[in-house]
Image 1 (spheres, rainbow, N blue to C red):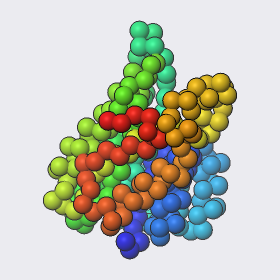
Image 2: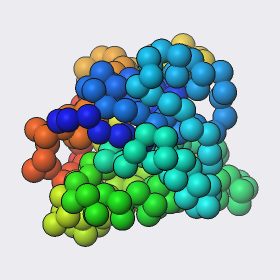
Image 3: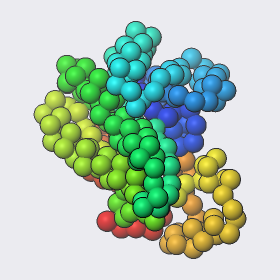
Image 4: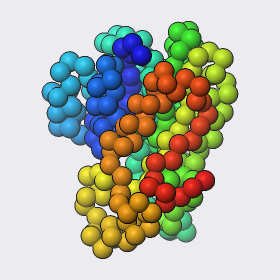
Length: 243
């Protein structure tokens, strides 16, 4: 595939950073969208050697996405690849869940997919080419204790992707979902070792995944090799759950 402009939300840390770096390694220009950690964004840009740029805006805010997208196009050019990876957790039992914890997770994890796709898809349709990958979760497939909000948002991403894939196929746009299992990230690195051990025991391959392994799946889905794959949900969870 020739060099394209790719947008990766949540693209300066964790799984998103690995995806950004993988797409740069494939020869693409990457706009890594972030909202919180300026230091991580600067570090990403410094290591990208001019092939990646960080853009700060809130993907849960539609107007911010419109402004951010315009800035990306002005800086890097028309967008051909979109990876919706941004996400947060606000875990807790449903019967005690504050309304804000429901809305914040839905806005950031699910509404952001609408926001980013809504501003980017028209341009892809004009180009008659696009690659969209939405990063869901194993917990969007099977549910998870204490994560009604997160599971709902991640399950919604799967349905969103399937429907958008049907609408977009004739315009040369593929839309697919990746559902990671438990991955070694900064967040899991702060978890109690006993909790980590109990998680690993549930994973048939006997370990957690690595961010690069999710990035490799994304790299494949945006490549020409995956041009006939759309509306698919790919699980990368070490065999922990088979839908």
